Amino acid sequence: MRPLKVAVLGCGSVGSQVVRLLTEQAGDLAARVGAPVELAGVAVRRLDAPREVDVPQALLTTDALALARRDDVDVVVEVIGGIEPARSLILAALESGASVVTANKALLAEDGATLFEAAEKAGRDLYYEAAVAGAIPILRPLRESLAGDRVTKVMGIVNGTTNYILDKMDTHGSGFDEALAEAQELGYAEADPTADVEGFDAAAKAAILASLAFHSRVTANDVHREGISDVTAADVASAKAMGSVVKLLAIAELRAVPGGDEAVSARVHPVMIPRSHPLASVREAFNAVFVESEAAGELMFYGRGAGGAPTASAVLGDLVTVARNRIQDTTGAGESAYADRQVLPMGETITRYHVSLDVADKAGVLAAVATAFAEHDVSIQTVRQEGRDADAQLVVVSHQATDAQLAATVEVLRGMDIVRDVTSVMRVEGEL
Ligand SMILES: NC(=O)C1=CN([C@@H]2O[C@H](COP(=O)(O)OP(=O)(O)OC[C@H]3O[C@@H](n4cnc5c(N)ncnc54)[C@H](OP(=O)(O)O)[C@@H]3O)[C@@H](O)[C@H]2O)C=CC1
Ligand SMILES: N[C@@H](CC=O)C(=O)O
Image 1 (cartoon, rainbow, N blue to C red):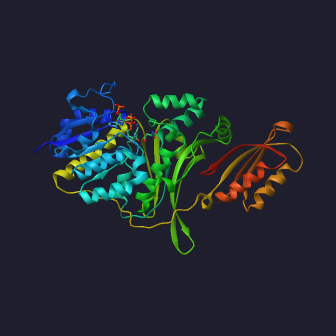
Image 2: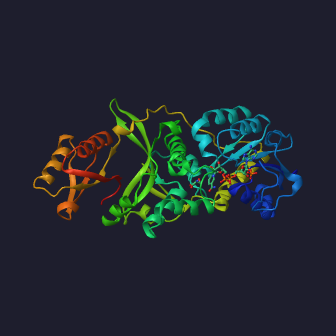
Image 3: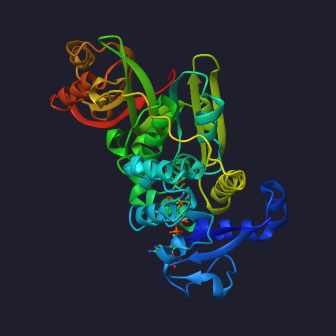
């Protein structure tokens, strides 16, 4: 059997581990694929940069396009990241007859449609398990194992860097910048960590999850996005006082809308969850994803969501699948975006708020705050007053309402004379 040739584009945190596993596990991979799997070349930006893996000089190139287009290459692994040149390289690889494996969630969530069309036209595979939640098999279960079920909700921690930062703030009292620097050092963060911190990375993953779960095309622009840069030590302390923890969650769900249709709600934002919630115990850069479907009920997927080796594990899994498909001259399950669903604006999403207020301890303060909630048709689940005089704190947890009602209530609270400061506003999941 002729060897299958693999080109790896990018040799950073993920690419170096892909090259290492390809080399170290060559024997096992050949047995699993049914043919030897050979490294055809590795494209990088700088030939002389230090690498986590030894790559023979003859295999290194800075001409990624020429490598992606080579006639003898069967599979192209794209682990450069970003939109360009990654998109042009993937399109060139498919046009040249190669199958593609990528970990590039930013590109898939922005312009997946172009890539899926190109793969279909070329009759080649485009696989991307590593793009969401690192090592955790979550896309294949959604696309294949649950293909006969009806998924109604996907919710989870899908960004390792922000989970690492929030976890260190909670457990070690670390500062934001210090924890981010550690996450970068450990290879979890994106090349530009703003993508992690401001929720762009999680929003891209939410779009990919929503698209697969609901057989729709959801792009990153459809996802309401808030990052963690506004989460303060006061928010984390406020959560702690409630027996809770702050996590950045990606949530995608189907919602009934008037007319009998179902719309998609997709959002990423910090959430306060009780410590008894299974997502509260997801530490460091680990990820966890809950799936709810009609027949299967609740499923939970947990594992390492970032880092070179865990992500390379998912890349290699895809590589074995597309290599087997090449040998059998077939392709795997492609995109299944047949449902045209409206995307709900955040204001119409049903949620709950936890609000901490710095108030003057005057008679009537509780009644005035309660009136602000009532005037927006938001009922209060619990209200607690702490301290007296100048240091009085009021903590209010609401019942469910639309995000627009809750946000409008907070605006009114901000304008009240007896409210000196709204010190923390956080959405809530689970029973506080
Ligand atoms: N890190 C992680 O934990 C995870 C990452 N991913 C995704 O995997 C992909 C890669 O991430 P990661 O490995 O962290 O990124 P890195 O920044 O560590 O590596 C990027 C690599 O791409 C190379 N590169 C950049 N531009 C070019 C170019 N024009 N031509 C050829 N090579 C180029 C760089 O070369 P040089 O080394 O010479 O600079 C580097 O080797 C991204 O899409 C990311 O979102 C997905 C899941 C987890
Ligand atoms: N920067 C990402 C890497 C994996 O997708 C993260 O922190 O999760």
